[in-house]
Amino acid sequence: MTTTLRVVVDDIVASTPSGLSRYTEELTRELIKTAPEGCAVAGIVSSSPQRDYDRIDTLLPGLQGLFKSALSRRELQVAWQHGLTRVPGGGMVHATSLLAPLVRHDRVNNPGEQTVVTIHDVLPWTHPESMAPRRVSWHKAMAKRAYKYADAVVVPTHSVAEELDGILNFGDRIRVIGDAVSSKLQLPVDAESRAAALGLPERFILTTSSPRPGKGLGPLIQSLTTESDAGLPLVVVGDAGWGDTDAIEMAAEAGLADGRVRALGFLGDADLAVALDRATVFAFPSVAEGFGLPLVEAFHFGTPVVHSDAAAVVEVSAGAGVAVPAGDADLYPDRLAAAISSIATDPVLAERLRYSGLDRAKAFSWSDAAKQVWQLHADL
Image (tube, rainbow, N blue to C red):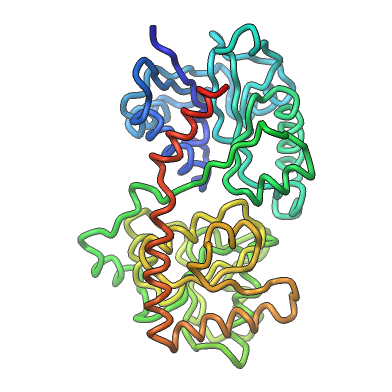
């Protein structure tokens, strides 16, 4: 008899690519690869176009079936928020976010009936201004349902576990299982031509920060105007806009010359790998994080990292990067500039950080994460 772990894979086909999409894909793929004997992995997804179902099949070879809800993603979010729809068949359910069928079930008499959810951060409580109000309400409502009905809650760091404990005391239901670098994030053979096509400078600061509150792009851009500034151009990857503000406008308002800040938008894995590999410094000034995967991605390529002293970021970095105190907002830009300049002007320091980053990146593995998830369900 085969025991099936059903994973909510809906975030893979979300309309906007995100870290959560990558997390869901990578973890589910490794859950399939590391499945114990007699176990299999199936998927759960909202009503989607056929091309999305085909994409899931392509990305997750070995997936043993895909339960396709009759509800769209938005409808499924609302239905599960109010406990109005179940997943037929029962059994083990693993949700890579709070999007989960959280309902009352009897795990004592039916040990195979179990639901595990994942809470990646506590931003809906600590930085609600960084999210749309509807998303804040949904996350808080689903967290309350998880408090009532989830058998376990996965978080990426001990820092998130501690913060969550002050919001909803899940007690011994919490499990810390970290993220890892995507298996697709590898340096391509045509790195030179890709770097030229991207217009990457010979030396530059790279960041994935955005204007969203708490993400630190403002202080980072301001750091380019301080006396400690190393004079390097700043390249912004990812979502460089928030509301009516974007990175280029912020640079102009700071009085920076045209071209000092460049926004490349979202990059595919190959181009992102080239940018990470060639950056002089990777800057991660965010103070609103549950893990900070870009940090580990930069470590993976041996790129020196400057980051904030936010608890989760410091936990993930574990001394492999240069931590900058962010508590005093007025001093934060100067401190960022000084840290960046120290690396840009000191080859010995840069080389030391290169090797400490490479070593730290090895601590995170999707295979290990998947094995921990299987063990968690076995323990339940």
